[in-house]
Length: 257
Image 1 (cartoon, rainbow, N blue to C red):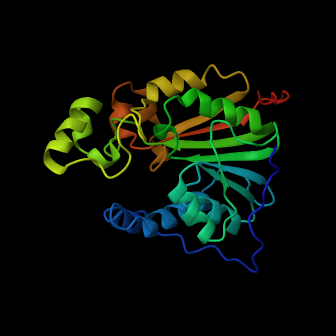
Image 2 (cartoon, rainbow, N blue to C red):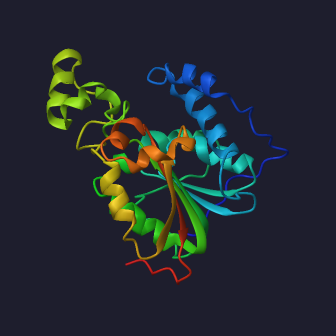
């Protein structure tokens, strides 16, 4: 059994400046060729607007990637444990000074109920069974703990990742069309590292979780427009990135099997 790992000690770490939405959008336009500036800035903005306290909290960054969010959380005073499976992302995170745990986010090596919070950004679309993600979040959270989960739903403008905009033809025809014009996707291939994920299906799933209470569901980048989540069909296209927040019910966390 692996114990909880803390991010390295730093002295007088100051969070980077928070960019405006227009500045973020300009960086997003270069995301495919130069992802680090965009995701670093997005992480800073996301954590600056965070709805839960993070200072002094033990937080699991589930599907941490290269560690952009783990670093932003650490700069805000959190005790962060990044977990990711990908070799390249783990290597990048470790070279950046983060003691990331390499492993399956659906079966983490931690005891039940050891985290105050779980942060999970843009991982749901990269697993074949989203329910398994929520089961693991429920297991590792302490009673009263929180979870922040966002993902890119399939029919949003960025849902197909590499094959955008052909994903609107469906996962199979969309991939075929993309390959015809551009060749094999360089990453996030359909049914290998990317699965079509709908908001309707995930909302139905999380409303029946025994240990997690859904607090809110909003479009991540424009949360004031929460009405979009109430309109079937419309929400699948216009949400862009869906954000769910949860609280762990005040019952003991189940042990790992």
